[in-house]
Amino acid sequence: MRHRDQWILIEGPFHPVSDANRDEITVFFPDFYDLGSSPALGGAKIHRLSTEELRKNCEAFLGQKPAAAPVGKAPWNEPLKEHFATALQRTQDLIREGRIKKTVPAVFARSEQTVTPQERAQMILTLLEAPKTLYVYGLWQKGEGVLGATPELLFDYAKGHLRTMALAGTCPKSESTRRESLLHDEKEMQEHLYVLEDLMSVLHPWGDVKTEGPKIVELPTLYHLKTDIEIQCKTKPEFFSLIQQLHPTPALGVAPRSAGYKWMKEFPGQEGRGGFGGPFAFIGKEEAVCLVAIRNLQWNETSSMIGSGCGVVAASELEREWRELYQKRLSVRKILGLDV
Image (cartoon, rainbow, N blue to C red; front, side):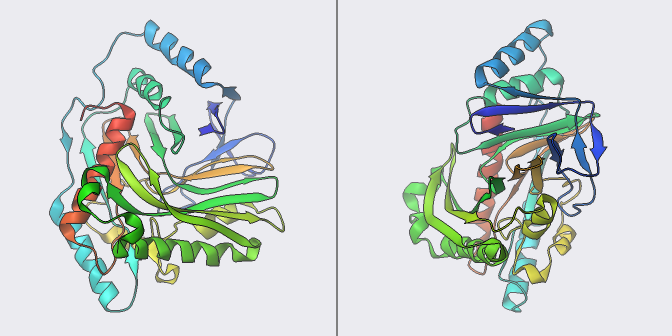
């Protein structure tokens, strides 16, 4: 994980850790729908590297290995539009019935090609250039892994200070000249406010909630609405409890929270979602950073996939949301240096 201009690397082999709030840093990356699906993992060594040190390590590794065809050469099977149309229709039916206000269907492009160590090193080299507005992260072991650069922080806690964000409302740069500014787009602002109001409600017991925003954040291929949230906590959170309280925010789940979110896995095309949109946390005894695991490539021993999600509210339109989903997947391929 890239954090505060430093690269934190945990070297395996990994082992389950029952008490993650201890001196060593542990990593936690469970299934989106089941936070109990994977334990926190401790490693054999922890390294803290500068960008240049990590670059030299990757280049040295690649210099010792034969070149391989980059991941992405195999055809990508794009998600089916009719699957997303079904999810959008079911969501808007629930909204009309007054049962929910918003949910976030996800779709997945899939490839019958896995990721080799050489490809992984090359993608890391590309990610070294990712803008500071993105949190670079990854985890791989036993033939499975994830690598990506997310703009979304679930929380960052250090020295009594808790930071998080409401990140919802999107406009692809390719559409920015023919759409209203996000700050004046009623649909996108409403989507953003659902997330902001939810987070403020959940976090209020920890202390006075201060916000800054909303503002427009520029990423390589997208614009997002973002409100920064800060709290000086009265007491130190128990980090796993905090993850359980926050995940998923309406930026990836459902508004209101009381409607639950696990029913979303009944939407078509959800097979193998894994950790997409779930928490990705590095946890220490006194500090913790937890990302929202979006904008990533996930793989196993035989295949790879790239997911994207979009917020559906009453005013959502199929074609506009479908284009946004594609642009988000395209941004992943670009930031990882994959063929587009």
